[in-house]
Length: 162
Image (cartoon, rainbow, N blue to C red):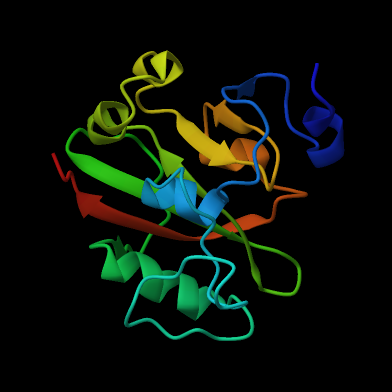
């Protein structure tokens, strides 16, 4: 079993779905990009969408603005249930209220975007996460990974982009 299970306190029900890579992070993976690492600071080294503030810290407000620019809207409750035709993200913060992780619910449009990822086809309705510079994992519930990766404070949705 991979060291990430112990290091991050992940339940054994989580499945590793990719080899470790530093190419992208959870922010990028949740946005559907596995080719770049997304950070609002350290200009030149990381990608950040044009028109968004490049702050020195990655605040919750910055994260919400990022996903709004991609068509997601914050919902008033933390509804994490799968719903056909809806893409869903969960934003996690650490004890200092800094964004620590973003997870994405696996829906048809995400499966279609990565046809080479056979693991996604069997995981509709589950959640996918990129664990820092480690592996991607699949987990049944968004809150399965709360703890060392932070705690869910915001859920955002958008209609499917198929």
